[in-house]
Length: 181
Image 1 (cartoon, one colour):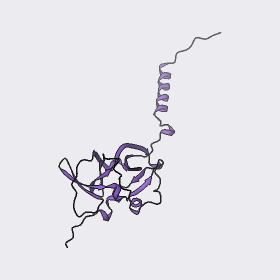
Image 2 (cartoon, one colour; image 1 turned 120 degrees about the vertical axis):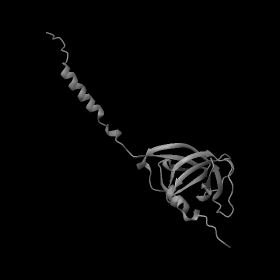
Image 3 (cartoon, rainbow, N blue to C red; image 1 turned 180 degrees about the vertical axis):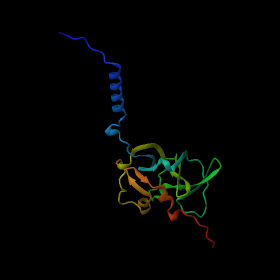
Image 4 (cartoon, rainbow, N blue to C red; image 1 turned 45 degrees about the horizontal axis):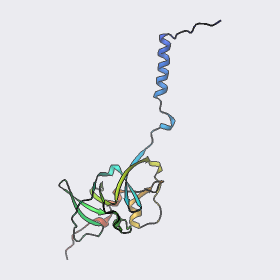
């Protein structure tokens, strides 16, 4: 004999809904909070570099800048952005990379802040922001120039070299001192 389906009482419905709510409120194992980092990708020819987005103030197409006599060749000059003058560091020259062959005429200026300074980095392009787990950034690769090794804090799986803006801008070679002759 078939019995008629019994509807749950109000108390049973309340208990079932509370159990479901508790189950849904627990984070899934795979969704545990993991520290991620967002890197602004910068291109210098075939080389790729990344800077923590928290160190980047803004990016601009590179307009005109004024050279400053008596500075090392990696200082390209100064640029005026909304009435504020920023020094411009030619990142390619600073890192000791091959000179640009002129194929990428349009350049970008990436304003970064670190070591108490705000500096414009001249790069070929800054096409994207990559987000990745911090654990996926490995140690820097051996080799390259000493400046490059000192300015890099790690490398990602897809070979994006992560620049340490604070270490780079603390480099004593970047200081320009007026010397009397």
